[in-house]
Every structure is written in C-alpha cells, then in structure tokens.
Length: 199
Image (cartoon, rainbow, N blue to C red):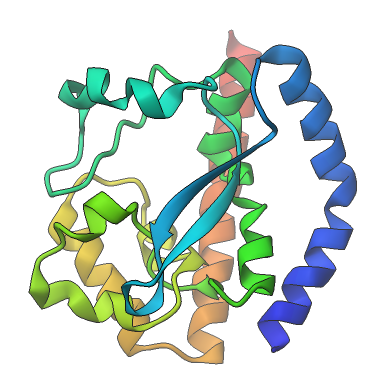
C-alpha cells in the first residue's frame, strides 16, 4: 500500500514532465505517446506494461528483421543501440525516463519499485527452471541488474542478480538498490551531456 501511494504521488509530481515529453515525442515522430506490451508478472501472470514510446510506431513488427543484432547471450533479446529508436527515444531509453509510466503499474498492484524486470511473454517461457524463483515476486522498475552495472550481456549474471533481489527483499535492501540505480542513471546522464558538449 505504501508503494502504491508513493507511486500515485510521483505520477502527480511528474505530470509536467509527462506533458513536456508528450509534446516532444508527438512533434518528432508518428505514433502514440505511450507504448504498452504484455509482460510476465508475479507467478507468471501476464499484464500490460506501460512505457514512454522510444521507438518507431511499427517497432514490434520490425523485431524479426533485427534478431541477428541480439547482444544477449541467453534466451532474451537485447540490442542496446537498437536501430528502431527514434532520436529522442534513444536518449530517453538510455537514462531510463521511458520507464516512468510504470508507476501506473505499481498503482495497479502489478509491479513494485524493486524486483526482477518483467520479461515479454515469449522470453519468460524460455527462462530455465532453476531461475523460476524470479517469478515468485512482483517485478520492479529498479533491480540489481540496473544498480550493479546494468545492461550487461551476461545472462547468467543477470538471473543471479534477479534471485538476489528476491532472496534479500526488505525495505532497506530495496532502498539501497533504488539509490544505487538512480546513481547509475545520473552517471549516464552526465556522460551523455559531456559527449554532446564535446561534439
């Protein structure tokens, strides 16, 4: 209940940010402001996840054409410099702002602030049984996968970090993961700004 109330407060607090991003996205690319996709939640129950759209409007239909670009070494699909990104979308995804609408999922009780990231249905089916414990809790916006050098390609390490989030779940542990994740994102923002200045 605490997390759901906090998420509702943050949605109201960030409403001006959503409005500004809405204008930017609608002016720079065709398609809806929000992107939604079926993901696997607690006990593998599917739910619609919400994100700010960062890719071209027909990105899902183009996935098959870029499967050869997959950088993950397990049964998941990850392309960190995905050609389907829009210009502004690439930046938003890099610093994680596109995940903000998942506060809606927290309010609805489908996600929490810290937990394993929710996987698309087809990818969740391919996760080995020895990692099934990751599906025993609500998925999160933040995770150790992000906090400890996110976006690595080591599938085994990713799953081990997910299990760590499940086995160590507590208020203080979640707080630690959140602050570490935010610190990582801040570093990405600073690095990106410096890169733009140098250009």
